[in-house]
Structure formats: structure tokens, C-alpha cells
Image 1: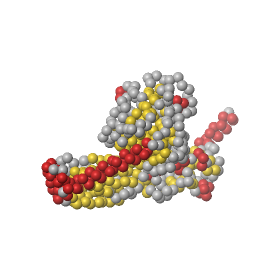
Image 2: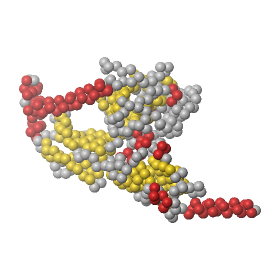
Image 3: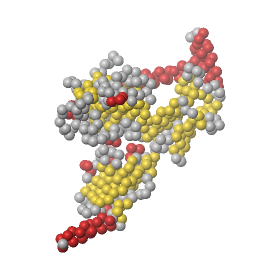
Image 4: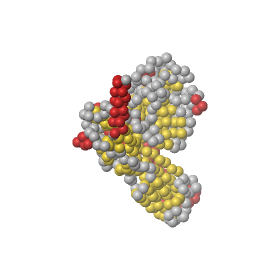
Length: 462
């Protein structure tokens, strides 16, 4: 009975102690701007020393989640996510007061997320979460006069970049009334949101405004469209139907200038694409990383999803939940390029991944987790897994993808090989370890097992 009483007393003391202290933090999300430093509050109440405790800060939405680790009276830098190295610190002198707040320096858009502060002693632990919202005031709206459409309307593009969160971009007429955009595009990269809106102006002289707004920030650009431009365009169409010689009139000159700009842009993209194909690498797939449902060809150039599990060992390198496979070859410097045939498929993931990615369990594809990929779902939904996902509007369904990486520039670009057009780019990334090609052949719509993904030899005649 005495032993039981002592045990119960010890449990009661332990429970009491665990209720004596709490980890506390801010009640509301923190807001900061890019380039600034921010402090994520976390402390023990009532105050007691945390010098001999374990303090761990981590991001809830990252696979490699450790932002900062203090343990055994040391800062464990080697266990920290490389993305946060050199930008995070505890206030060491404040640990004796129970203050485990984290300083995050040179804030970037990609630092936005939910952080957890976990404090543990030999007999007690508690944690709190801190939400961080990152704002970025980007470029002023830029208006571009593009071209006349087939009906004689003048296409106007307004774009802005580097904003976070997503700003509100508006076209307004001379009276300040909102105009409905013909087309809208939104992309997100490491610097923030890039937004584009198009409208079509018709033959009435008027003033147009393009305005971008985010909370207390508002920037506006104006343009005056003269009715003479439309008169010139109509005149040019009449004269062009009579003789090509008369195309020297001003209206045709304007139309030709717009057209020439477009042609030059396309030629520049195609020239850039041709140069990047010269960095073609010999890529083969690594069977030791392939998910157990994947079937690889003998030469390691093709992968498809089978109906049954393959008889393969459950080694550490193998993906066990997501249907991925990596390339054998890793790249830690310079530039490389490879092509993947996606013809006949309704679903796929293609891109590159860093060496240290998690292979086990559920995976979220994003640069924060070490993946730079684009994907197709349901036959027509293209997107870039940029964390969050960025929808892509493609005029032509790609049959073959080109993937280009410039390691030092932090660039991953995707191309439609047949149309020689640019699809999407991850820019201003930070690579610190080997990158490997990654493919996921998925299943077709309604789970039908589909054609393979094929790593193609680069044909320079295409």
C-alpha cells in the first residue's frame, strides 16, 4: 500500500508540474513585409529557464520541417532545413527567462506559413503555433498595347509582378467603372504573384486605367487610346485588300510594328529554347526508387503504372505512397536538359527533385519540399506545383515536355517541345544539393492504366 501511495503521489506531482507551465505565443497571425526581420514570440509562463530544455521550431507545411533546433544546450544547425540556415536565431541570453522566441531575418514570400514552437523538459512539454503572413508590394501595373484582333479591337495587356498575397488587378474606364477582363492569368513564384489581365478596346476615344490594390497599397497606370488608331486600322485593311504596296500607310505601319514585336518575342523564346536543348543529358530511371506499382523498361527510359504490385524490396530509396520514380543521374552544378513524351496521357507529374526528399508517406509537391514540377490532371487541367498550385492556360496540349535546369541561376523551365513554346518557370530558387529528374505516370481518367512516360532522345531537327 505504501508503494502504491508513493506512486500515486509521484504521478500527482508530475501531473501538477505539467499543469504549472504553459507555452504561450501571439493570439493573432503576424504580418511582415519581404526583406524585413520578424520575431515569432514563444515563451514559458510563468517564467522559468529553458536553458536545459529542448526547443524546436518547425513548419507544419514542409516535409523537411525543422526551422531551428536547440538541444542539450547547443544549436543543432546540421539538422536545420537549409532554406532557413543563416536566417534564424534564438535570443540565447533570454532562454534563462523562458523566452524561446525565434528571429527570422530577410523575410521572403516563401516564409509565409504556420510555425510551431515546441518546448520539452524531462517531465514537461507544451507547444503553440504561430501564423506568419508575408506581404510584398510589387511592380506598378504595366500597360502593353499588343495588337488588333480580327474584329478591329485593340488588345491591351496590364500586368504586375512580385505581389503577395495575390493583389486585386482592375481595368477601369474613364468614368472609373470596372471593366470585365477578356482573359486573366495568375502565376506565383518565389517573389510573389504575377497577374495579367487583357481587355479589348474598340473605336471610341477614351482613357483607360489599370489599378493594382493590396490592403493599404494602391498603384495605377493610365493610357489614352485615340480613335485615330482605329480609323488608321480600318483604312489599312481596305488598302491592303487592294494592293500590298499601299501597306506603307501609317495604320499598316502600326499593325506591322505590333505584329513584328510579337514575332520577335516568339523568335527569342524559340532561340532560347534551341540553346537550352544543347544541354541535353542522358537520363535513365532508377528502379531502386520506383513505387511498387510502377513498371520500368529494361533500358530505363520508360515508366508506366501497372495493375499489380511488383516484387521489389522496400528499400529506403523507394517511394512507398506516391507513384514516383527518380532518375539515376544527379546534377549539382551547371545546366542540364531532358525531354519526356506525355502523348496519350490524361494525368502525369514531371520535373526535378532534390536528393534529400522524403520517399515515405504522403508527399506534397512544392519547392519548399524539394520538388519543382508541373502536372496534368483530368486531361485538361495543367498546373505548376509552386506551393500553392498555379493554374496554367495552354492553347495546345503538349505531346512532349522539355525540362531545363540552370543550377547556379536557380532556374527550372518547362517547354512544349513541338510548338517550341514556354510553359512555366520556377525562378530565383536556391539549390544546395543534387537534383534528379522525377516522373509520375499516374493512371488515366477513371483509373485506366495508361501509356508510359518516355524519356526521349533530343532530336535537334524538331
